[in-house]
Image 1 (tube, rainbow, N blue to C red):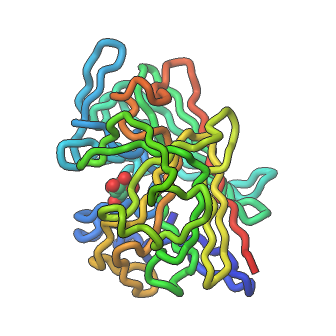
Image 2 (cartoon, rainbow, N blue to C red):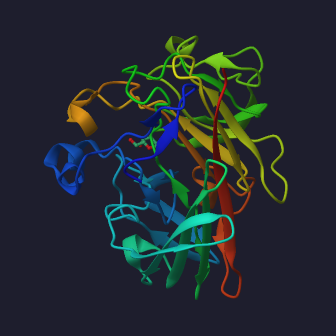
Length: 314
Ligand code: GLA
């Protein structure tokens, strides 16, 4: 996703995602080096798998390691770096783009031939809906997400620290120094992770070394779509409400952006220039038996939906 035009409180359209004016921006050595995954469709596995290893049905699999000792966002050539079949169309809900990809058995170390279909829909009522589905011929972990960086000020502000965020989550997954979950689900109450009521991103970010890059455990993680986040940007009045079928959301505040990338319209992307809300199963689930399972079995169809609803507050 390279551009997303959304009206502000005066009805003026602005581009609220980070990215580049053309494809060379995504192919530059600086971009490849810093690997921010602007607007990317992430797979097979969003976030980290510890030591790039997991055991499934008695067999141990070794994945590409592309984040220190760990596997991140599908590996060296994840779904963000492959060519998808793209088919524009329309449905009752709005304009659609259908993306299809066949991931071969053994790709980046994962078992099974995986067929993935992702449909992006721009709805009549100012929402972006993403519907993911996948099937496999061998048991394999799958965790698909979208890595768009939002800045609802559409370039009015260089960082997202004034955005007010609500996350309907009483707990988050505690991580070690390499951002691998320890298995503990910790209460957010009384901490800088408590977004059960609206807080500006910048209000308590200094209490979290580096910034937010954590998975929140959504309260209403039931069947069907439930709220994942609400965001409000005071300058533009833009709002975004995220709902998902997924049990978690990685709230990442662009901590690794360091000004080395210049994006659309000559904007320099410094620290916290955008934030991501990556709806997902929890990081490292293949090695955490107590987390909701990410295993897809042959004969099953994975289905996952996330909706980003835009609006304004006047
Ligand atoms: C995710 C991860 C971060 C980082 C970004 C990409 O949000 O959790 O640690 O890798 O992707 O820079």
